[in-house]
Image 1 (cartoon, rainbow, N blue to C red):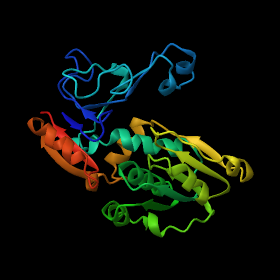
Image 2: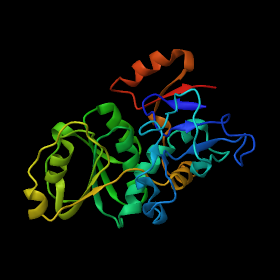
Image 3: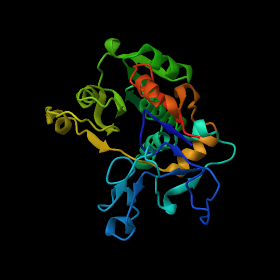
Image 4: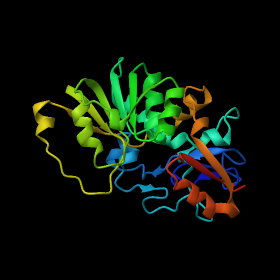
Length: 272
């Protein structure tokens, strides 16, 4: 079992805690983080991720992966293909989040700016490029931008960015209050802004540009695990450069300290 100390939700591969009588007994699985009731109106519409009675692993009324034991509904589990390493499979949840964008939007060669060069920004850029978009990533940290550039995707340092309202789609992966205002400086009239991260701080901004330029703002959260597993298995996204370090469980405190570093993207704990 591996768990990420930089992302405490969903990034779990567990070979031991599946009941022996279950259909996944003894096999590697990933678990969808939203545990729905499957009996309400939204669930009946296929919107289990928005079930009002749902629990969310590690977030809402449900133990996270660092608990002594973790119970996940069998319907939430997906097999990890034998050809996919555990180190790759722990990226299923963030890759799925990136895959949510093409699930929500028709992508036909749009020009896209992704704000934020961290793990989610990197994966969103790769997924959108795979779907035929012309992608550019804006970020602060040179080492993170370098990883994206090595994947063949255009990058630009934030302090060198020229605000031009010409981009069809702007994806905010900053996790910062500055993300949405900056996105409005880049998106073209009648373009779309996708908000991929929640922001803890209070946000105040002028909404007049949204109305004047008829900009669509789209929230985007959890995505399809099955699609993410397929993309990982086929090598359609490359997650190896995102793995910053791996620690044994007894060095968990060191792992957390490593995860706090600005150059850390994904830190794993080896629980096995």
